Image (tube, rainbow, N blue to C red):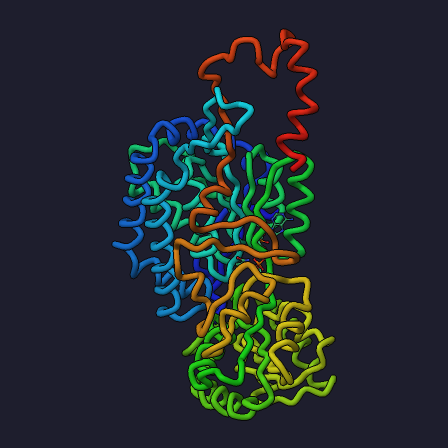
Length: 486
Ligand code: NDP
């Protein structure tokens, strides 16, 4: 039985550190401790939790260089990208810490005509213990979206990171303890290990589980949680499309799409994997894209593939598209090395090939020529994924965005929504369900309690009583017609 995992630098295979593989009973013990700590955390109230979360944010920010370096070495991304990831994570911690109270405060509701003598109110309560399972591609930003939100809403968290990036996760979790030495253990707990450790967390007694990862694993997680009736948030894979309309600013669109497709070596759930461009501007767009990408070198602009197995998936998609008749504007099968992949642009592959239908998760992009925006929208929506999309147009952007069947859309940019802490993030279909970030994320990590208070009895006409007078029973059918039959 494996007892530990060595975390490797994906660029060199150097061992960076080692973490234990926790067994199911240890994961259960961590969850039990988190449950005990939940009482203390809830007693802090919103002001107390805000103070603790902001102290954590300061701790992360003051040691930014150290964390950026670790993120660079363990995940492989360039230091500048690691810095951006940390910056966005801190923005989310700040927003959620400062806004939880406002978003989750009790609200009054109108009691309606029949129950005028009642006051009605909705309170939002934390679930208790939230399990968070995260991926390796944005090992800080992605789990942080669930963790910071769940904590601000009053839950304690047990976090299982990817086995490819456990050291970043350990640093991030330890920073909470360093920033809040007076807090009892169990507010934010790390459980390291492999997929089995993640599976154990689903059945360890958590009250809600937030999973970010592939669609295939998401299905397993949902199945395991169903056994215990544990509610889930699933943030899964994507196959995001960008639509370039004839009236787009083409140099700007090419620049943004190059970044959206190749940034982080294409290992971005909301990265651009497909482009649909109107025929009249296709050649000019491709020329702009070519010019941008000729200056984009792996090892400088982006890092190695974090997970070695991903190289084979990218190779299969590229080879399959070329065999099916795609024109390679840039790169090709030879672009796939042993660790790094050079940018690949596949023009007009058939809609049925893997490079269009499946998540590639590499620095490749398909560009499909369309005759109209209607065709672009139809093809963009024609997959079971529905995570995000981008639209480039001067005059029609909003109209196009409103037709895209995704959780978020960037207009004249890529990934814009991910940088705005007040916006929700989440998908539909094979990209999952539920929301993290923003007010909707805070609501996702709470449950409601509705309170109906009878302020005064209405003598003789209480509807909810066996002592209801017979004349009221006779009146009810007429009341129904009067209230709802018009
Ligand atoms: P995986 O689905 O392989 O793994 C995600 C997490 O689940 C890891 O921590 C993994 O552990 C764990 N895990 C594996 N098996 C199980 C199991 N049976 N039960 C519970 N947990 C398990 O995804 P990747 O890490 O490869 O991440 C890439 C994927 O994540 C892509 O599809 C990407 O699109 C998606 N993603 C989605 C985002 C979104 O917001 N929608 C954001 C970022 C990524 P271990 O690594 O130790 O095996």
